[in-house]
Amino acid sequence: MARLLEGKAIADKIKRGLLQEAGRLKKKAGHAPLLASIGLGDNESAKIYAASQKKSASGLGLDYRPCRLKVGTSERRLAEFIQKLNRDKSVNGIILQLPLPKHIDYRKISSYITVDKDVEGMHPANMGRLVFGQAKIVPCTAGAVMELIAATGIDLYGKNAVVVGHSEIVGKPVSLLLLDKFATVSVCHIGTSKAGKLADYVRRADVLVVAVGKPGLIKGEWIKKGAIVIDVGINRAGNKIVGDVEFNGAEKRASWITPVPGGVGPLTVVMLMKNLVEATKLQYGLI
Ligand code: NDP
Image (cartoon, rainbow, N blue to C red; front, top):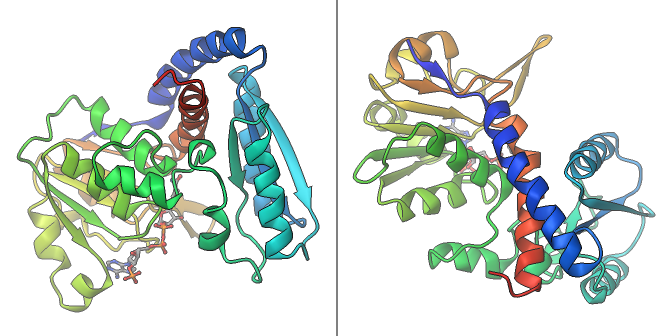
């Protein structure tokens, strides 16, 4: 039976370190690291994310500045607003709250955030650093996945790692981070499934990371005995939240498995705060 890889305990440990670093940075700069959050309009889920980020920041002695713009703000105006925050020395990190209205191209607009304030790690230069194996700020969910794997204490060198899902925020960065640890990485996606090869890949995974958003996509009997299973998926099934992996079958075969909820989720906002601290250190030339 697998051991549970719960995000909260790992998050608490990271938080203790961040609290100390935030205090040190505050002494150096005269103010705590500050995260500016830009939201357009009144979207309910964007407001929920922002509230959780604010709570997390204040618990760590970090500052949080909500910036709410009109829903009809043009791309040009939004870009100018971001550039103003880029120049503002009191701001150390900038985040765009999703979802953005349809007239805003997220990829285009997020590249206006200066690279050292890009706490989501989505700027093309931060993605480039990831490819070069020199990432300082990594996308939060990908960072959370790596923290969970590290908590097992298992060395990834030479292990078969299979990542299901190739999105820019999870699958692709996780694949590169696993490659940095010298795992042999396979990345599966819709093409793998359509070719009927998903089960074959999953069966050989010593480490399996699934980020798709389809409940029960990964069958319990596909899991290799002793595998580490990280289920990033969040799906609503009736009044329950479930992942992408059939938990009951998988936990009988895996050595470690993340619960959903309670696995990756509790770590993502903490990784955002970690990125804010790293970004602040970059700005002060401390790393
Ligand atoms: P995306 O929709 O951006 O990506 C999903 C990926 O899954 C795509 O690469 C897609 O491939 C692939 N895919 C779709 N269907 C299949 C299939 N049948 N077989 C194999 N691959 C398939 O989602 P995200 O990466 O943003 O999120 C994935 C999941 O993780 C969601 O449930 C989301 O809610 C959750 N999530 C959880 C977080 C947390 O904090 N716990 C944070 C972020 C995400 P293609 O594009 O080729 O179709």
